[in-house]
Amino acid sequence: MASTLMHCPLYNANKKASPEQNKPPKTAQVKRQNTRKSPFIKRARPKTSLELLVRPNDLNVTRDLCGFVESGLMDDALNMFEKMNRSDTFIWNVIIRGFTNNGLFQEAIDFYYRMECEGIRSDNFTFPFVIKACGELLALIEGQKIHGKLIKIGLGLDVYVCNFLIDMYLKIGFIERAEKVFDEMLVRDLVSWNSMVSGYQIDGDGLSSLMCFKEMLRLGNKADRFGMISALGACSIEHCLRIGMDIHCQVIRSELESDIMVQTSLIDMYGKCGKVDYAERVFTRIHSRNIVAWNAMIGGYALNDYFFESFACMKRMQEEDKVIPDVITMINLIPSCSQSGALLEGKSIHGYATRKMFLPYLFLETALVDMYGKCGKLRLAEHVFNQMNEKNTVSWNTMVAAYVQNGQYKEALKMFQHILNEPLKPDAITIASVLPAVAELASRSEGHVITPTLPTKNSKISYSDKNKEFESPPQTTSFLYSAINSL
Image 1 (cartoon, helix red, strand yellow):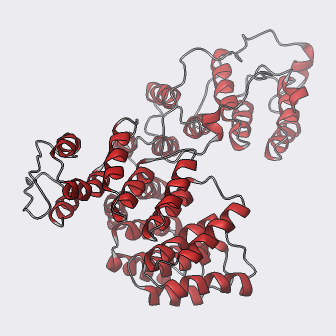
Image 2 (cartoon, one colour; image 1 turned 180 degrees about the vertical axis):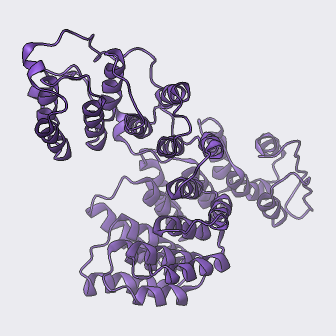
């Protein structure tokens, strides 16, 4: 493909994918691109006699072009494109779609700018794939430019285009802008509703997701498998057993109970709502179980302190279906070791993860830190924590909690001071984790450091030692308030 792209204005031999694009983000981070014009844009040039021989309405040539694109042969497609009369919007759309579908997102955006430079009029089939490319690159600035162009040419309310805009803003992490696009739509289809239900759920806002799902049903829209899967995920977040059971009834009425993705979502929902027996019933009805279904059942056992059942389930997974445990299996099993103090099994998981090269993996490493801390092996917890290539707020909170659980209060306070020097800001969990150390040491100096970091307005906590009553204003979150008063 490289040899062919050299003849294409989009080719740049020195261009490499940036590390930010290759690395899957844990949370959506906006990649702000430069507003410079694309270096791949060419000025329109006179058409040669060879180009005029191939008409854009030649069905055989157009069919061949589409065939190359659908097969992922973008070098052949570009060669043919350069020989065609490029006044037809359709063939530009075909190439842009090909770039996007083959993961060449920057090339799709650059090709769109070349199209604009050559004076080819874009339509409602051009923009969706350019918008999708912006979303995949987390390119907010370019996405906003495209959005502005859509409004200018009167396509800002096109339902097909708006669905892609919603998806783009959700991927970038701007859920408010996705809501604005959704609210301004005159007509919404099922894809529009599913995008918002899924977007809220992925953002961790289960309540908004369920409210959106309910409103969708109220307006007469029939939920499909995608909407039900997202709504079940929202029930898992909010532990809404009743709503989850209502959705289960809808699944049965819609004859989706044999869909493996729906079944897995039901298992996950029942497990997180504490109904392990219901999860088992759904699980036993799955005819062909994959690794995701097994992991959901193992996770359900582990979350509800079914230590032996979780490990037995992993053994059955290997014996019955010949399924090899993956990194998610390990993450789901570790809470069983943490709660039961099963250090030997925890070390076995750590060793297996090392042999299978699952490490480094942020969530697995954080789970190991938690497990070693709860099993009283603080040095092992420190070792895993120090070996982590990257750390998020949860990782730091877990290490602070490990110090407190093992009576190392000064170390917990030192860790908290270290967090304050990091780009990450302490949250309510951080404060709740470190306050027992402050209470044990009766340290007013550390307390005055903690007070300004509380996630409330005008909140101040009075304390002298853990035997005295703590007072907190109404603004303080209930979670933090309960943690403080439990000291």
